[in-house]
Length: 328
View: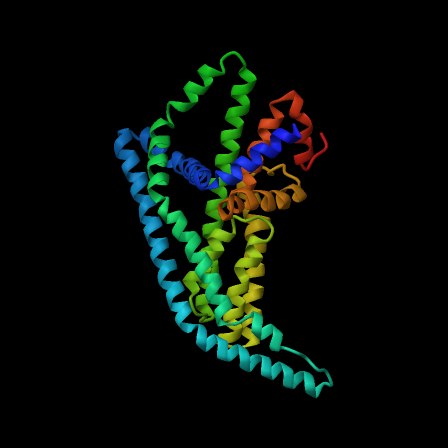
C-alpha cells in the first residue's frame, strides 16, 4: 500500500501540468453548477443558461487579470521609492537603537529585502499566473463539457453504482460537501476582500485593489493564507505612511479575518468540516508540494474527498478516523 501510494503521488507530481488544469476545471464547474441548475429550473434552455453562467465567469476572469496586471506594473514602478524609504527606516531604527545602547546590524537585512528580491518574487508570481492563463482554453472547454453533463451525471453514476446504494449515498455526500465548502469559501473570501478594500481605501494605502485581490485568493489557503495576505499591505503602509498606520492595517486584517473565519463562515456553513487542524495544515503542505499553488488553494476540498472516500471503504476506515477531528 505504501509503495502504491508513493507511485501515485510521484505520478501526480510529474503529471501536475495536466492534472492542475483539470482539477481547477472540476472545482470551477462545481461552483458554477448551482446557478446553472437554478436557471434551468426557472425555465431557461440549457444552452442559454450555460452561456449566461460562462459569460459571468469569463467577465470576472478578465476583470481580475486586468486588475492584477495593471496593479503589479504600477507596484513595480513604485519599488524604487519604497526601497529608499525602507533604507531611511532602517537608518532611523539604527539611530534609535544606538541612543538606547544597542548595536543593530541591518545591512544584511537590506541585502535580503531589496528591489531585486521583490522584483524576482513578482516575476515568479507573474510567471505562475501566466502558466495558468496559458491553460485557460483547456480549463474553459473542460468546464463547458462538465456543465453540459452536470444534470445527467448523477443519474449515470447512480445507474453504474446501482448495486451498492451505500456508494451512491457516499458519492452524493461527497459532492454536496465539496460544493458547499467551495461556494461558502468563495462567498466568505469575497466578503473578506471587500472589507479589506474598504479598510485600505479609508487609510489611503497604495494599491488597495491589488491587496484585496490577494486577500480573496489567499483566504482559500487554510491557517496561513490570511497572514500572508496581510504582510504586503502592512509593509506598504509602513513605507508609504508611518508605523501607526501600519499597525492599524494589521489590526484591521486581524479583526476582518477573525470575524469572517470564526463567526461568519461557521454560521453560514452550519456544519464543521470534520478535519483535524493538524490534517488541514499538513494537507496544505502536501497538496502544495504535489500540485503547486493551486494545490494549496484546494487542499481542504481535496482532503475532504479523500476522507469521504475512505469512509465508504471498510478497509480504509482507519484513514477516515485519522483525518477526522473526532474519535468516533
